Image (cartoon, rainbow, N blue to C red; front, top):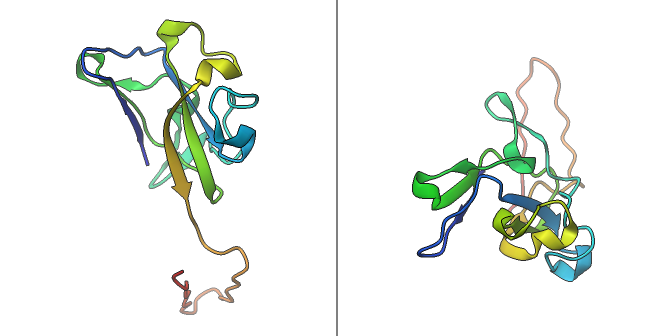
Length: 134
């Protein structure tokens, strides 16, 4: 998936802006607190679909027309959970410390297959995978 940040009317963004995707259980879900200057370990630095490419989540965004939007694409999260998108406005200083990422730009609810399910498949035979909807 991709993450897009859009500027408020009359504002412009910078290619030096950054995001951090942080599990919401960290620091009571508040951006800018201890640990929010680093991505969750569940954020992958490589996204493989349909081919493998480096994810730009730790670097510069792709800037939209007139610097009114910025996009990080592709983004991959490997574990279910709720994650905050903490944003750093580079115009307010560096994007190096926890407190630099104090603006909560959004929330990601990542859901996946129940880890407790087991499937038995063999090579060269049809395999049916049933995923119960909850």
